[in-house]
Amino acid sequence: MPNLRQIALIVGSLRQDAYSKKIAAFLRANAPANWQITEIEINDLPLYNQDYDDDPIESYERVRGQLSVVDAVLFISPEHNRSIPAALKNVIDIASRPAGKSVWTGKKTAVITSSPGTFGGLSAGLHLRQVLQLLSAQVLVAPEVYLSRITDSLDEQGNLSDERTQTFLRRFIQTFDDWLA
Image 1 (cartoon, rainbow, N blue to C red):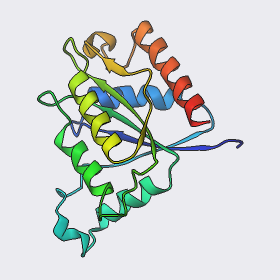
Image 2: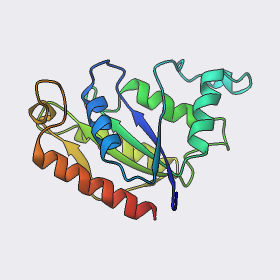
Image 3: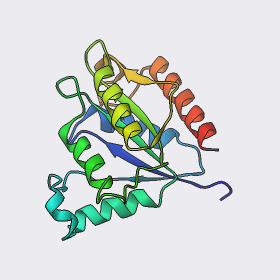
């Protein structure tokens, strides 16, 4: 397929019925045909500990390997206590180590956050962008995606059904794809 794009998808919530997973499902269903999406599992990762740099952990190596070969990483995350969920910060830390071997350097990334509240995970999104930029990742600047009142965008089956949100996310997908080109 021409211009195949390898995209890693990291969902920042471990909750089985997470809103972030519903957004991820919509994005996968609406992704361009040339995107090959790999979801990065983060629920089995032990907390990062520098002592493990000399004695690699299999799950750490799996994640580092998956992230090192993709063209871009798309983060979809909730907000926990006005910041990044612990599991998401953990995978970012794991992939930034050992020192000098960060997979984030130069990696193209984009961030989507959501919340049932008014601010759409704004604080988590800003913190996540800040961390990624510190690690020398390239972060898509616009549009910023903070989906507020996400529960209002879901139907009774939990599908993303709000037309305005769908349209916005489709435009985001197109902008992200154009940026990757």
